[in-house]
Amino acid sequence: RVTRHASRIPRGEREMNVSILGTYNSKFGKLEGKSIYDLIIEAGKGAIEDSGLNPADIDAIYVGNFSSGGFNGQEHLAPVAIDIHRDLRFKPVTKVEDACASSSAAVYEGVYSILAGRYKNVLVIGAEKMTELKTRDMMRVLGMASYCPTEGSKGETFPGLFAKFATGYRDHYGYTDEQMRKWLAMSAAKAYKNAKSNPLAHMPSDLTWKDILNLPPEKNVQIAGLFHLHDCSLVSDGSAAVVLATTDRAKSMKGKVVEFAGIGHTTDYLELSKRENYTLKAGKMAISKALDEAGLTINDINVAEVHDCFTITEILILEAMGLAKDGEGWKLLEDEQSMIYPGGKLPVNLSGGLKAKGHPVGATGVSMHVLIAKQLMGEAIGIQAEGAEIGLTFNIGGSGASNLASVLRRVK
Image (cartoon, rainbow, N blue to C red; front, side, top):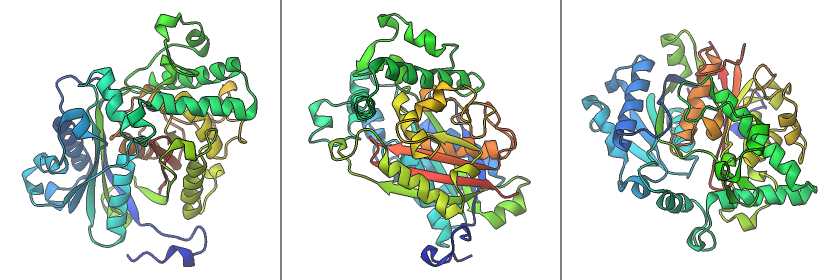
């Protein structure tokens, strides 16, 4: 089916005709004994099996990965996917890199290739093996996703960069350190509690926000600025995969079908000093674009998985989604009966999010799509958002430079 030119189509009448046919999500955590190669093969096999297709039916493969060279000494990663099955030999395989949004970008490449009519069935894998390196070396590799001349090469880390958002938010809106620490702890506690229901999560916990604030310094060490240990997402290993096909084909093969309804992809300056440090302006635009293409508003979304790489990021994303006014995203965290908690109108990160589910950076984007697809099929990995039919993913690369949002909708 040929997609009509978006600019000539009234809002809400665009047809993407691409659906998720198969899914797989590995356990996230420190996966000893599993290599980056093992993670790619595991996820690819799992998604193909779930799709109901034969490996020979896969037309192309995209692998989302941030830095297998830095973490594992292996560049030219894409051909590893051929080892999933001998029938994939000679298929086109491409690695996609976009920092922590690498595998969302890989998903989009798969979507676009089907919309273009080039391929019918596409396998997309996201994978990262991060825990083989010592902390100092791991931070150096992650720093490569920042702007090297003034950030990475000067010893800047991502906790340091996102801590600038926390202080920028505090200063811009006139809050105190005490208020900020409370709100950040609330974000962490929500993530930990939700992760307790996720069998694949890296770090479920019973810690409440009060517990976090009362931890002795050695149990919650200061990392950068307002950030302490419990404000930071986890260094994890893991992989996830989806098989994409036309919606028509998916409906002919499956009893439950989740379709892409809208995509928003925006890019801002790589260097944080060129951007506002109290808001995610490009993130707002990405989410708005995805909703607009789907012909929906945020009020139509039933469940979301978003990029809470640090506790301040969740607050900024709640505002970018339009759930709260700028400077007031924390209000949704303070009220544990608000829409973003389990049982609410739009629960956010029921999986535990990056903060507690884990954040193997190259796997994160595909994992978000898997988690939302499973939610919409009523087969949640963890807490189920009852009756959810429309979901949102939002994935960030770098310190807010790359922003990728998807609206998914159950169509069968």
